[in-house]
Image 1 (cartoon, one colour):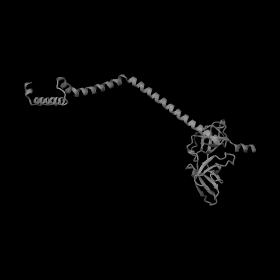
Image 2 (tube, one colour):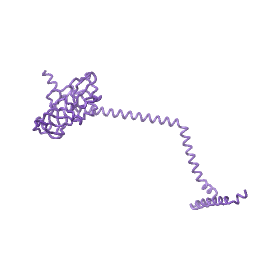
Image 3 (spheres, rainbow, N blue to C red):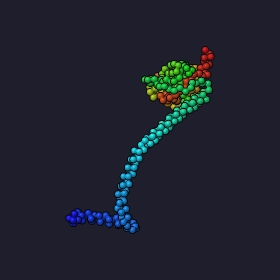
Image 4 (cartoon, one colour):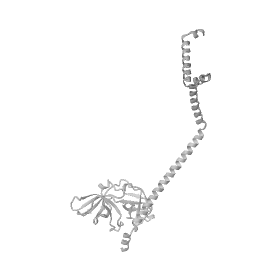
Length: 288
């Protein structure tokens, strides 16, 4: 032992300890504090106490998680349930908002076309597979007063006509189809600019249709609105169909045609109404 105290290792250790004590005394006196045994001890032990407090807090948090795990789990489940209830309320609110919007459109149609007798709003069940002209089915049928060849529309414009009707489901042929012809006239230039709305495969791919048999001297211009003439007795008068996007001569040079953009986005329908009766149709029935 005596040899250890005389050894170089002991002298180095003693010098290092003296150096540490000197730094601590300097740090304490530099701050204006008097040096006492207690303050020196506090200064020396401060780093160890910080580490100890940090470890103690981590252990405390870990123990809290373990001992209160059930309580935290129950609280988490309660919050999840509340979130689920709020999501359900939000979904119901959106559904009610959409329903109110549909009813608002329903009222708008009645206000603009007082002679129309229309169905309740019909949900679109789906589009007919592989039909480029966007035929679709709706959730109303003969049980709801819908018959064959009833016009189908929205508040924005004409959509098509019913071609198949069962008790609770109907199929609608749209204005994009070449199998549907509608007499149309310009709402801008009057009765001098009229023709037949009839779809084609080329236009239908772009969601467009075509006005054919148009007089070569027509005054149509881009942006003009085409509406129904009501002369056929199948469609009500003055119902919007679409706007002119292009006017050109037919290949034979004897007549003109116009490309028409429907007022309704035919490929993105969620609901429609069916016009079950109107003045022009009733008058024609009375004459028969």
